[in-house]
Length: 146
Image 1: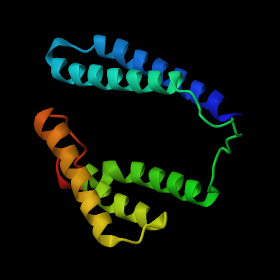
Image 2 (image 1 turned 90 degrees about the vertical axis):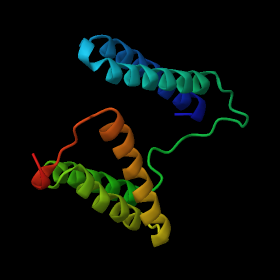
Image 3 (image 1 turned 180 degrees about the horizontal axis):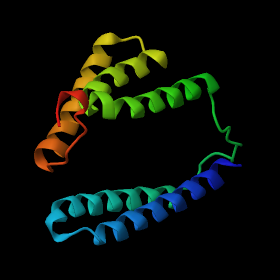
Image 4 (image 1 turned 135 degrees about the vertical axis):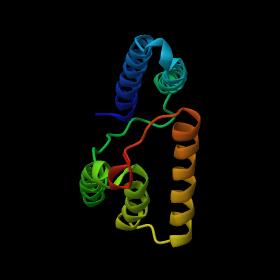
């Protein structure tokens, strides 16, 4: 498959997903109006970025796209994500994420521990502030709570 046809395929898929998000958020109950507004925002951003990808012209001649550039890294990531998904209900979202993010970075070859720790802290802080504190989204607490 060529790069431009791959871009068009993903752009159409992104537009379809944005439409599904938009229509799904319309069915939210009135008490979840803030969450619905956030989903509308995400759907709009996804639709805009998908349109950019769809209308983008490729400056170089099309080259064939390989599906996976590094099969080892892909396999490591898939296995780590499966383990992470199984760990969340047991240990809770934040402890599992605090363990998973640096571990995945190390498994994929990143060797700058300061940046890994700072990046993990920034991402988890952002998730806490936006989803838990402002939007009130309950996250799995695992063995640490309810």
